[in-house]
Each structure stands twice: as C-alpha cells, then as structure tokens.
Amino acid sequence: METISHVGQIEEIKEHCVRVRIEQTSACSACHARRVCLSADSREKLIDAVAEDDSFRVGETVQVCGRASLGMKAVWWAYVLPLFLLLLAVFVSTMWLFPRDEGLCALTALGVTVLYYLGLYLLRDRMKRQFVFRAEHLDNHFEE
Image (cartoon, rainbow, N blue to C red; front, side, top):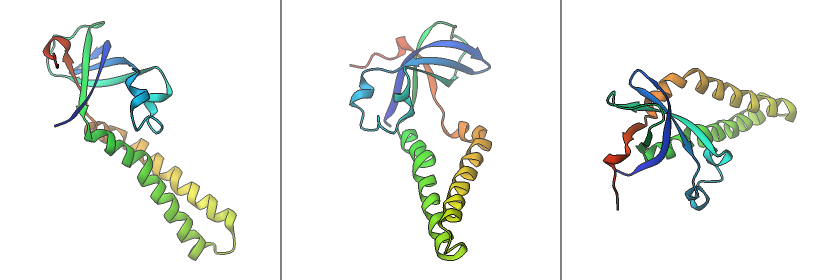
C-alpha cells in the first residue's frame, strides 16, 4: 500500500488524536498535483492524526501517514464532482428550465455548486472518518 507521509511537530494532543503542524517541503514543487493542491498555497498546515498510543508529547517531531489513494479521493470530492454538477446544471437549465435566459442558467449552476459545497461542509464529520491520517514516532521509520 502506497502512503503519503509528512514530518511535523505536535501542536496539541486530544483523546486519541494529535494536531500536527507540517511544513511544505521542496518536494511540492516537483509534485504533479501542485497546481490543484491546497497545500501549495501556504507554507504550514495543521493536520489532525490518529494517535494509537499515549506516548506522544507536545513538541515532539512525528511522521503523519495516510494512504495515497486519499489524495485522489479528495480531488474527486473537491474538484471533479462539483465540476460535473456545475456542467450538468448548466445543461439542464439551458435546455429545459430557462432556455431563453442565460443569467438564470448561470445563477442556477452557481446555486447548485454552492449547495454542493454546503452539503460537503455539513458532512465534514463523516468525511473526516474517511480521510484518516496516523501519527507515528520518527524512530519507527528508517526508510532507505
């Protein structure tokens, strides 16, 4: 199983969860998805990761790992599906709902897109369960 991993420092510890601050590395400039990745927008990100034991401490440097397939799933939910819905709304509103009013067609498509992202926001807790990262001690990973 391919994994995505980042090294960062623990900022906060909650029940079985650690909040890790990661820094963007130079690897982002070589990544093929850097133009659509929100991580490329800033130098630091906070990631909530599952802590499988209680041995983590605030300030400790850890590795945050997740499945590589999570990246493609995130792109699907954040970009591909809303684009499809936007185009479908334009097509349906142009052909059947408001064939002579382009303004209403555009507003309908934007409204569908806003409703989609509002739905994603309301389902954020369910989405968090799908997009799970694990925190691991650095001394457990010596890859060569």
